[in-house]
Length: 78
Image 1 (cartoon, rainbow, N blue to C red):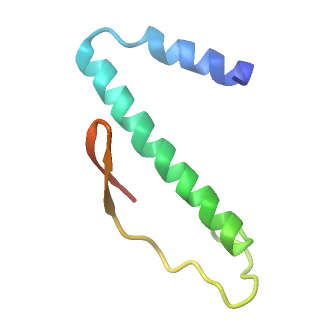
Image 2: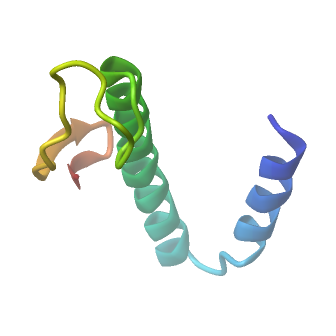
């Protein structure tokens, strides 16, 4: 793992004081991680960043919320 990410993770873990905090962090990490990966996949597929110059006929036309099933239950993502 990148040393900077390791440091940030240690700082985050240091702020968790109970099971509810842990569950919320875990849920948000999964949700935001999946959303980040999907955005990166879309950028790679289209060949340009969000807000960037359009390449070819492909465009970004917004997003819709979806529900995915995970090992920890259903999760809403953008």
